[in-house]
Amino acid sequence: MKSNNKINVPESKEAMDKFKMQAANEVGVNLSNGYNGDLTSREAGSVGGQMVKKMVEAYEQGLQ
Image 1 (cartoon, helix red, strand yellow):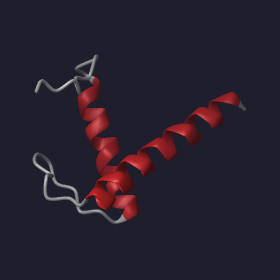
Image 2 (cartoon, one colour; image 1 turned 60 degrees about the vertical axis):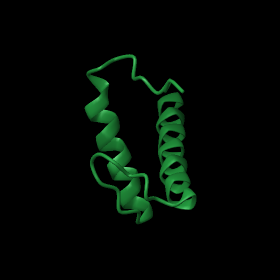
Image 3 (cartoon, rainbow, N blue to C red; image 1 turned 30 degrees about the horizontal axis):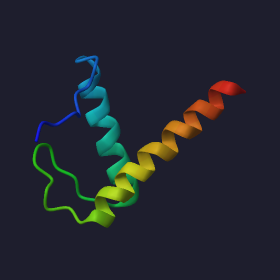
């Protein structure tokens, strides 16, 4: 199965990785660089949810 998780702007990968690490830290998930397949679904979901929450907050701030 081919992965479709490519970042369209290669320069943004570092920023996204930093953003992901920051979100993981905020929710108390120990995320490492590289392989994180040992995370539980709950841990992975909480990191993703925190990232979405922060993106929505940033968007709302831009509307004001």
